[in-house]
Image (tube, rainbow, N blue to C red; front, side):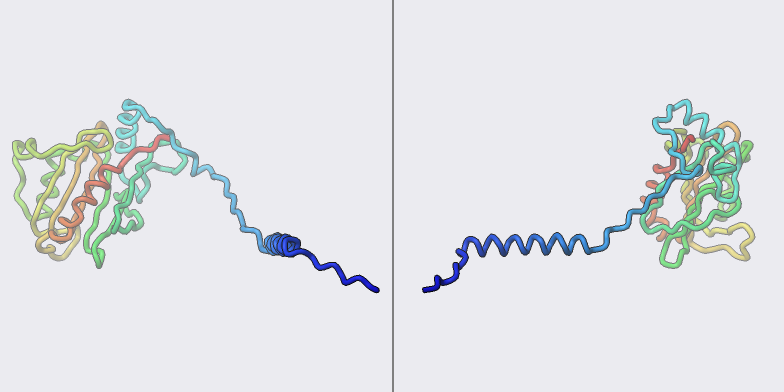
Length: 228
């Protein structure tokens, strides 16, 4: 009389099922497309900047960079010429736009870009602190400040150097503008060093500039020098 076929035990069937699931997973993983890995070598313009710059090196770099004078948005004559470069962090809500003549960093802010902030440099003494403060005052339709008033302006630290902070309210007349813009506010920082001056200037509707005053402060604090 023939024997009935052996029936695998439940434990055997369970182990076999698990093995089939594992083999199927391995097979599917082998058939899936491997993720692409992009490798890009740094070119000459992307050499790592020098870190742990000493105070003496920073002092020299600021003077060297400012003494170069402003360019078309270029902190140094060439990206890889070994000269110091100005770097910064763009505040949230600001839009960086291409640099133009005399502006190394250039931004707009506000719903319609009606506010602007930029960094510029002037070689030589640029007229000095008093001349530049009064130049801004004239643009805002204000009378010149006295030497005593200028001496009393608040000081800050920018790029490791002493800077002078200016806040002016008035009607702003931009260079070449046909008419003045009413109810504007100007925030500015002036750093005068050997060989020139560095200027940070924010201008726009008073309420908008007031809303962005913290961003102005954080931007100025983020300014730094890269020494190649």
